[in-house]
Image (tube, rainbow, N blue to C red; front, top):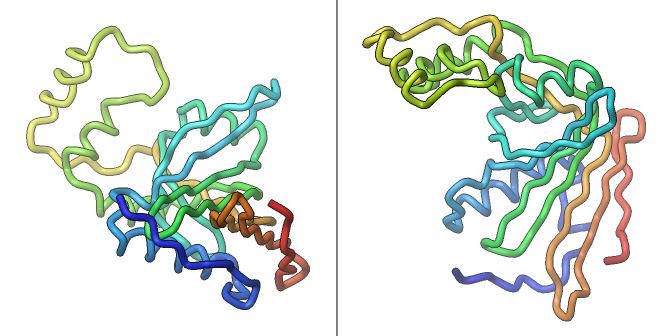
Length: 201
């Protein structure tokens, strides 16, 4: 793996809209050969306050970032109790970079979930239908048998499966620097815009 050193980063190098800047870095990682640049580590907490973290895939970007899951999953239960989350993207190519974000979370509309569901491969749809994510299952064979029972059916989206949108109130862009003198820029939402501050590494 070859990591490109682009030198120091300045505020003027960044888009004034952090979500557009996220698009730039995602595209750069993809073009440089990252196998899954859309993977993000999602952190949630429920009413008990116990943090929980896992990887999910970014599947949409508008005024927030969108991912999809089973609404019966542990992450969805947490978000039902505490609709706030944090997420991190991390890449080594073309530059060692990280983006952190945090904000409020809400479910996507049924129509949006249906549109994404229709883009999934038939096998993925069948697996999602038979798997109640995070629930106890007796064996893998039970899951495989349930999928096999569907045959070549391409099921419609179950009501328990859909999307969430994180609308960030803060994002931080980090880029590795020489001798650990890293560049960090934080965007904080202010009214209809964003304030950008350089942070000490």
